Length: 211
Image (tube, rainbow, N blue to C red; front, side, top):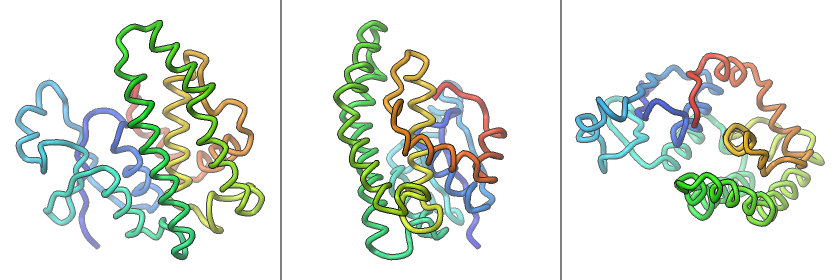
């Protein structure tokens, strides 16, 4: 079994889905959290492309968060049972990447708090609904939405939904702008994933951070 080290900053951020995968799989790994002010100027010189997250596998470092996620999902049998399930999972992962690039970054880096909340409101009302509609459709296509996102066992899709919803609930929810509010199906899935023993244990054990 390979040895794993995961390098990232002292937050959940772009490394958390990889952490969730390994926690769900029961895989031991070194969760190396870098202080952005004191350690990063030196540490970044050790990283491919001078960026994190980075996954080290048996001493070899690899970058790009979604490449890491896909590798780990395949490694720990969380990428579905066939190519069609994998396609549905890939579709979802690309949806979350698109949301991050097209919407999340614009909201997160807005310096004016009033404008930030306004962008959150616009995203909740007009930006997010098309994505939620498709996610709900896919969920309903699998066991009428009563089980997992695809197939009959947990996959990285379920972990990605849980991770994304947790972040939005924590960040936008405090402004009254949780974009998943009112989605009964997705919130029920969120609760099912939150109750998975390994995920519940990690949620209690992980450091409390704003993002």
